[in-house]
Length: 379
Image (cartoon, rainbow, N blue to C red):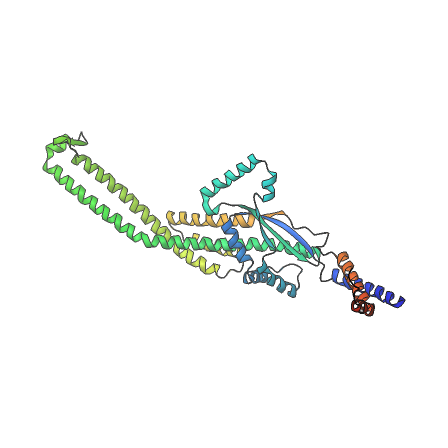
């Protein structure tokens, strides 16, 4: 009996040792979390998140900016775990907890403001304050460093995707303009030709009736029989010439736009080629900036310089939004306590389990005999 008790105690000690090895080894995890400020809409977040959890996108960024303090095997595990998306979560401007705690009047004001933004900007209205990022690691310092690295990674993905979408929009607008520009030009030229023919006809009429022309120079409407009103030839001539001036102005603006779009087309083609070589968002911004700087030396007219300034402003807004304004409002800190199960809990559970198993094994004969004993008659 004494030997069995000693064996059970030894099993408990051994189980505690195994629990300590597990609790302070593979099962020991520290989690660090941070909140990255980046006001985005629902559609933007979904697009960015799908790219961020993609293993290929992560692998590209790892090749440019490796995660700090991770071994190659840990980096591979990080890339494999990306598609789960457990490290990323949006932070709404008004959460369910806020809705319960805020007074009704403040909540109503916030909802009205959101509705106004949605009606004005549509899908571009921001409904998220930012994103929450987290990472678990055996070492608390490593968890904080990698969580911060994930924030930089998400910023980079958002920057890269927004730059790509911007250049794609430039290309689509350029293509759409090119498809309609020739048609618009031919229409304006035809309208001018028709107006010129009308002016010539009106001048011929006025030359045939000089007295009527002198009389009608002081009036716009000529009243004929049955109280019908007709525009006088002079008024028609003035109106037609004014219309012709307007059409020529439209034709000049169209020619200016055609010059701008032809200049932009070459820039967009080079930008798409350079973006295909970029491996990160910051590199995409730099390559696009280099293309704009290079084409600024080739802009010879005021129209080309105006178009170039517009494209540069679009790129500058992206750089300011994602590279400058997007910052951690809650920096990932070094956690002081591990995640559950905590090491002491693992040790206790392992010791109890080992003790129970040892007791069952030590008194197995008695248990078998107890189970085989016939039950007495029921009362």
